[in-house]
Length: 263
Picture (cartoon, rainbow, N blue to C red):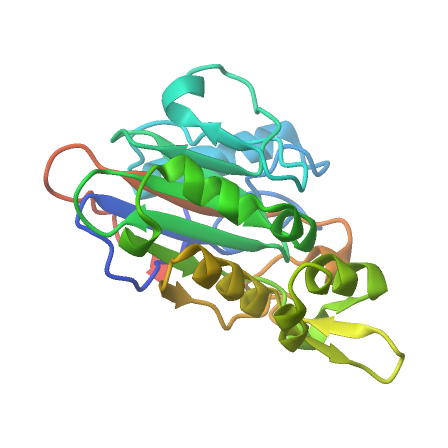
């Protein structure tokens, strides 16, 4: 069995906090979902999705099944301390928990995953799915609020997303950010076609800074430009998804996965 390949966030999270971002290799799905696709809504074979999810749980030694969401590009936050164990995929684009053993997960294939945790003190973790619609609608603001932790005490990690060079958008997207925040114009560059190249990373950093979240890590990947490692909806259309997961291990020591491939 090929081990899933993962990115492990490089951030100073406290010891109980564990996080990972999945890459394409290491699963059983056939093209165009090859290979480690954990998404059940993209047309992949249900048996392959179930096997991919099982592999993730085993390799990461997850304390429970991740709380998969029915993502709708909005700003609703699922509170896993209330919604845990429902057995459904609630329509939400973020999840938070204050309890060990519950796993927040976001699925992406160009949109930006943002993981959050309390740097110290009371436990709090969250994950937000930040496409341009969710960012503009306030998904980060809603997630930070749901964590019930002073923003200055939070850490944020920005996972892989489509890079500015490949994310062309129209006037509607530009206006969605700049109408309320003129400074957001710095995240857009006009291209030769009269449209805009949008920097999701810059928009997310700007939103986090405005909230008071100043310790922000990660960023810099481009899902579109690296087909060997990343799914990209804009590049491929029909494709799988990557997963960004965060959880708190039970006890004082973090859990250790049995040597997957890290990047």
